[in-house]
Length: 463
Image (tube, rainbow, N blue to C red; front, side, top):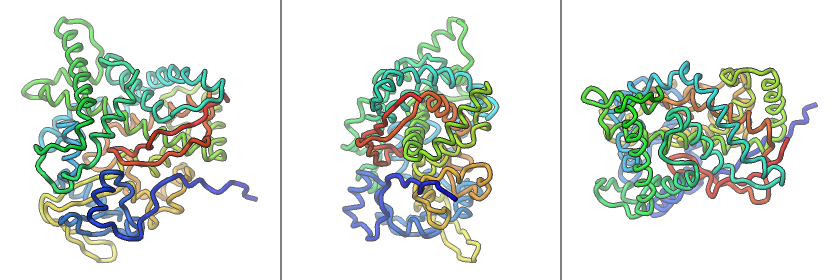
């Protein structure tokens, strides 16, 4: 007899049944783009609609997605609206650079993020998570609430600072999460002028409140670079880390100082943010799924009691990994992937239907809708980590699940993030249990990443 409870359906906007007006589109895009999508976006393999005078193709068919992101990726540039939002923050960082600048940056950073090299960070990830876990000791004694979203931002920042910058970022943890929230809340949303494709030199009034946070981040990066450069110039011993690697390739044949600064800002301000949000959503969904949580706790206890090296936890804890991957399905860190064809393109489906993707128009691959799509997922709105257990993984098409993107611009830190997440969840869940309370009411909003509006309150107790 199967006594498992019904799977949990976490909060998300209900698909629209009536198309929004032009004015409503502007309001929703500014407030929360996740609330814009209608029923067809969750049921059709692709759509072509006019959006502010521009033909927009929304891709859900995995073969069409593969065509755009992999097979003909060279014909697709970054979509202009996306760049109008991101470039003021990241400039020529890896997420926003194109052409030769992107190629040089990607090539320069690739050695740090190979799976083999990323595994070398496991010990540091474990050390930083164990130290962070101490902060929940006192709240756990009182069965107190913590804002897990803020906590995960601090944890992933500290792991990033230790692994890629050897703890030498020119700022501490205090207030860091709030600065990140301020930056993304004010700078990471679509301004009405972006929808109208107004030139980037026209000021976006909605982003003015975020300028202070952006300036502060830029100063942190500059100070971090200068401190490490002084050490290098004085022939002091410096860590052989990500920061040193970038500074060593500054020059005519490598990256400019501005490009290095942009990439460091990308990793400090945004590189950890995706993992932080996914971890917070995962802990929330796990708290609402006690049946699967029990299986995770048994797995964690067994692996840790065996003394397994943390470098092997990703393979030894399939339930922990599955919970994190399912959280990324429901709340993809990057909810949209935006492209524009450089030249006219066509694609033919398996049943012989051909669509045209015109030069300069908009092509959207939407992990938010793709991951909740009724054609490709059973009970798509429910938290069911079993989908990602080894016995079931082969049922998932490579291009129906895109938490890290795909193709040449796939997230360079995917292995790093997965390993970090499994280690973090294992350490925290070994010591503590997180439960929802009456004040736990998260709501997903799109601010570059899929963030929980006003955080996620969970009660923490000792196991």
